[in-house]
Image 1 (cartoon, one colour):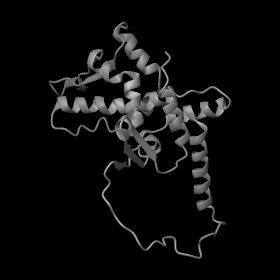
Image 2 (spheres, rainbow, N blue to C red; image 1 turned 90 degrees about the vertical axis):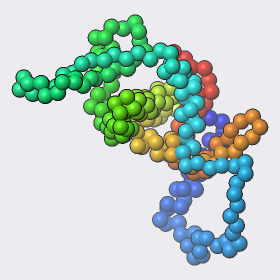
Image 3 (cartoon, helix red, strand yellow; image 1 turned 180 degrees about the horizontal axis):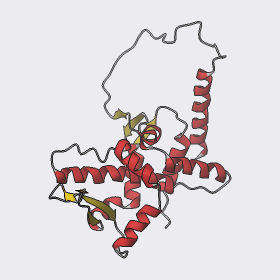
Image 4 (cartoon, helix red, strand yellow; image 1 turned 30 degrees about the vertical axis):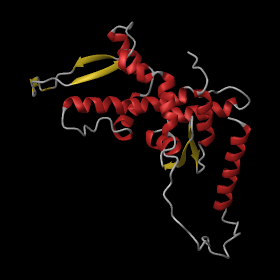
Length: 236
């Protein structure tokens, strides 16, 4: 993050803190909105969005090669889980539990063990249910609901990857490590509000698309650190 953006973030932070200060009564003796000559126009080259962080997510997907991996290297491991109660089969069709991986070199047992060993499964299931709502089954066919589940689960994975690629060295390494840990364990709703649902102005120029963030939030410096990291080659 360059010094100009860092100064802008600090200036916006001080402005918000000054407005929230209950002891600072400057400007309370006059109306907040004083303009009387107001006009509305339709923008031509300038657009605006309430989801300014979506461009960073798109950059993350392309940098990770997720779009190419989905098309070429996606493997599915299906485990049959027949439903029984009191030794009587209630349904003829067996529901299945899926493990999705691109590790073709691992046997099925190691895929399951690795998935159960690397993260908090209870928190993961809770976020998949209520966070990204991947288990809500909103469509009218089994295949469509499966595709929706995969796409929603990838949204949760992108949240985790955005935390994993953050650098944590340098002068403020301890603070960066704590921010990385918080982002990795953050629930999806908080992540969406902090890094994606950011109001932004979109300006189209001849060769690039510019997102101008219009508001400050406490995670804005982490957002720009993530952008700086995505502009560099990924290190395995």
